[in-house]
Image 1 (cartoon, rainbow, N blue to C red):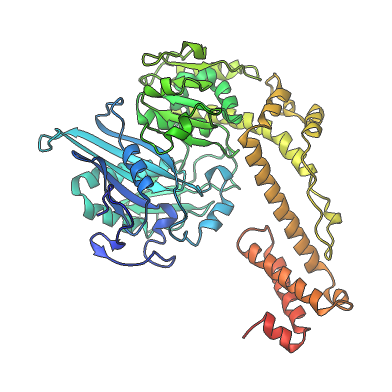
Image 2: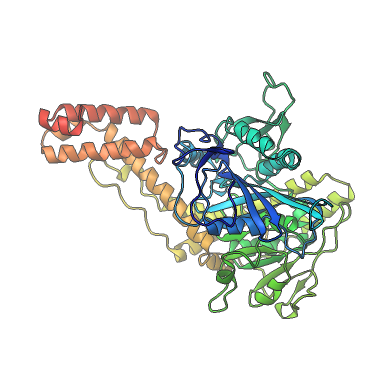
Length: 580
């Protein structure tokens, strides 16, 4: 077993108690498991060590000492939360050091078809936690305290919470043998390929999930149930692998949803102080999901403690606060982060029913150290006017006792339309920067994408601005100008520029494949012909790795071209280009 306090690398074990050596290979056991999870951890409370890592499974997965420490501290609520019984929450930590195992062979393919906001994290781990604290007279401290943690790069919070609800209670009763059986079942799951509806068996239950695809319509409903043939138990259908109950999360702040949307859009630093890790992590995840389908490009921590290795980095006063949404439960952060421009203090969640008292906007100067009352402490003034119709619609839904999932759909649709109204003019302008297809010729370097000029874009808003799709009035120009300085503009622009460059490359490849190769070769030297072969091969490799949007027919023609060109060269060059 892997002890949290141990330093240096530990002996790799293929399964519990059975030593094995060497790193996990892509075709080895756990390859399918690693398409979903990095590892499973068990954190317990040790009287001498405090929180300690009792188990990592599969135990050949390497965690650095810093990662082990972060997982230990973040897997337990701090003393201010007082969580008795069972509670679920999640955290997000930065990966330390380089990649320690090969990714699953389908990872790149899965990411290429997934919405940008749901692609796996390249540099962070999510920790999905099921924590139990119950009275136990057989334990010295009088309490049984243990957490089961699923570590993954996938932001599938709903799926992993459902999985933990099935596994954790059973594990706390039966311990290691149960966990090994569950991990073996996950190792039989199909890969999370976007667009597919999958049946995932675990502990006698079948979870049916739809893996979101970038081709899905944002407003589409839950997946239709698949045929239940060959499925002994009726499947438990999850309507989403990642979407939270947005209405429940935002109940105390519905009056300020638009203000919070603007703060998220602009990448503003925000401290969320909540009564428990569950409320903290749900609020942070709800806030970061406000911008979908736009990718949230800033850092965010659903649950954060003073013991985190990045505590000093986030709390320094020597520079401006970082663009991060920080979820905490310790009031100490109010004092430490008094210089942050926006603080959201949430009270204890109210029972479902009437709309809870809406928290008020308050000046940051009214922040008190320990007895801070619930409120949104900010001096920020919104660029757009508040949409009063949304709040009226939600209140009417409460009066009619409309189900929470219907209220969530109303709220999510409002935020989606708001984000789309903001992004569509940017998309239209970006599309105008793409060179015309007729300017792409087979034997010349593809033309460059035209530069993004902010003033030109702002001038274009008069005829094609957000007013075409959104009724909200306000200073849209000012919002765009501020957006240009945010990490989200940089992230959006880089992603779109990359996609356009790949499209240009694909169009150039198609132009080459449609050209008359024999005429081109008539006056070309061997050096030029070999250069063409090498460039075509490079494009083929990229296209086959799902990095270029190229049709299969074009790929076949490109392979045929390479064969034709190589066949025209002297035998010695043929041997060099196509070794036996």
